[in-house]
Image (cartoon, rainbow, N blue to C red; front, side, top):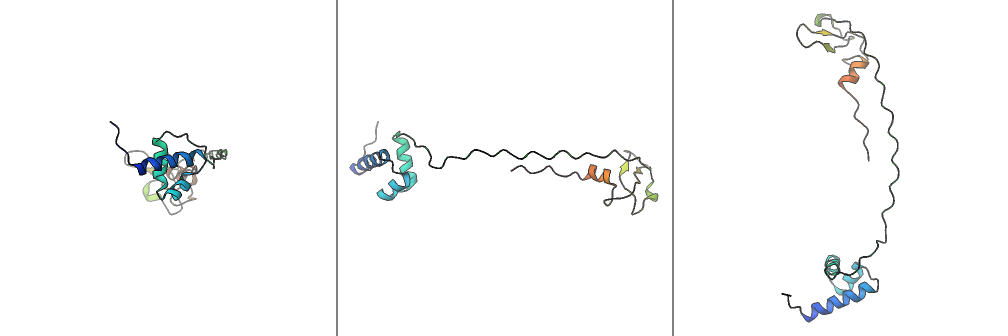
Length: 131
């Protein structure tokens, strides 16, 4: 059952229909009638008036930059199998084995506390952010 409409609402709908057909924007109609833009757009939608092309079309996406090549990991160095007591500040502390007694890489340290290879294993660089 349709809801009865006041003469003011009927006049507002007719004004919206005419201004919309004349090419007025929703904001212009709202300013003229003293209502919000959202209420005008809602009424246009409920009255099934034809939609408009946007005045600011979305620009096409630019092709993304190619990702840099994956870094090549150097070959794993030969482990010197040092015991814990043999480690110094200048030797790689990357452990080998899963049970005691553990042995350690022992190669020269490039980035504390690991050699270059084991630093790359333990602290990989995060992938580049894609925007």
